[in-house]
Length: 170
View 1: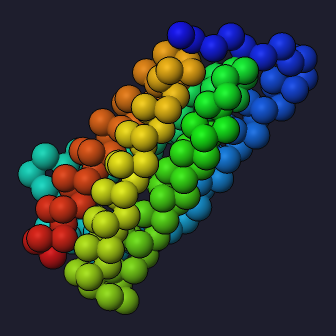
View 2 (view 1 turned 135 degrees about the vertical axis):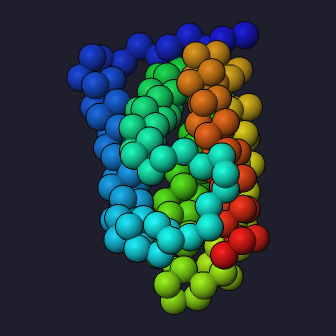
């Protein structure tokens, strides 16, 4: 059964949405800092999976995913469900793992080489599990929130395949 939204004023709802969008923007910005130099550096010359999309596609995709993630978290935040807190905790865990992956994969490679890609792979697999848990926790609270997280889960699984290829071939 879907939980009904908690009656909160428009200002509180707007503030919560802005905070959640801000958290996504912060993770995106920090990830961008960690990858900016390296995407045109070592990664440009790396052996990439044949199914790798062009580099220009990653920015727009991640932007849409971060907005959808924040929207999903906001829908759960608005709920009166007692499951709201554990669901948002799962969301926080996956956001932290998301933040850790980019510097591990892109940033550590120049110093550590291939082991950095394996560290990134362990993190992204943990991220995929955390996102799946988040989807499973969000869905019963808000079907829309669970559905909004599915493209993100799909992208993380896809990115895991790219990370695995890089670890095996670089």
